[in-house]
Image (cartoon, rainbow, N blue to C red; front, top):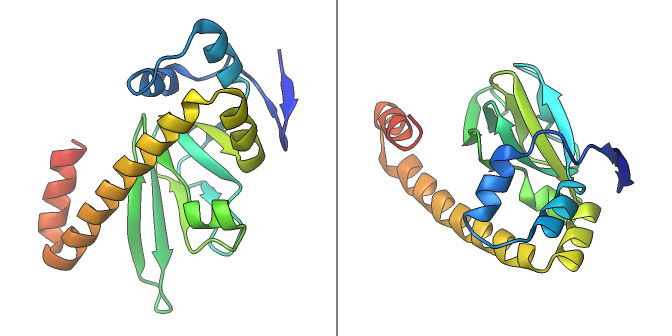
Length: 174
């Protein structure tokens, strides 16, 4: 069964195991709500080294990683890459500033291995939040956790050596 919603064709019965686990850790949803929730996501498989977002494009999705590993990074004028975030299985990734504002993205998002993703468009997200108000709480908790993680990354960036950053990453995401 495919449902057209927003800008794409969605398969509500595709890859959603880790997404449902992630959501159930933070909020309670009934079976009907879970079935409805699944219809808002676009399933996408990407290959290693494939870009999900290119700097300069408008970010169209927030993305959940059902399987695989992604990184968000920027490149300076000298060609040096600076990793902003890794998204492992069960994690979310996006350029939230671009997604919310519609402005060009400052970041690239690349698959570091073959990955299975679930995309949520802005239009679908707005409809989801209207139809399932409990998801407002889920996304608020998600954003709070992301702000804390961002603050920790900023401190690490300013105070740790490259080796210390790597060791910290291996500690947090083995």
